Image 1 (cartoon, one colour):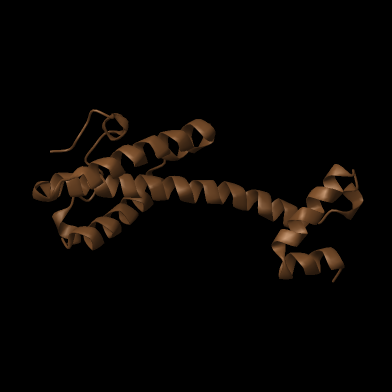
Image 2 (tube, rainbow, N blue to C red):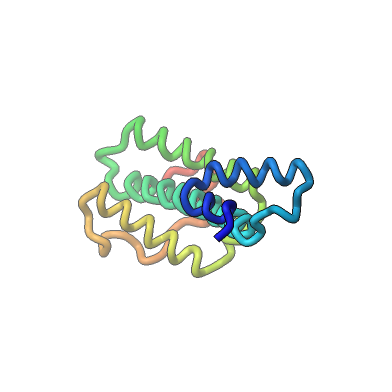
Length: 148
């Protein structure tokens, strides 16, 4: 195993710094192309995970807002506002994430994450909540919409 690949396995930060130095120096023959490609793909996966996580938190708080009106407070309101802003930011910074909003499998997985969060945070059962997201995308992103 060459030194570059060995560094990747044992210290990815040192490896990344070395790869950046090699790129800037035009030393393309010395680059660890296979691992660079893996890392670039991982950046995209990380962005997708963050987007899905933020959507699940937003939707879980919207469920809490709707299903536990007696517990509504500034904390929940703030979380919904922040997550709406963060989700919108994700879409603005990475427009290709919008494609996920049209994928049924993405919604299925995101809604499963939402229900897991909502059941943990409310103590209600999965059956207490709808099987699918009850709101339109326009409602989810509408800063004036509050589920009742």
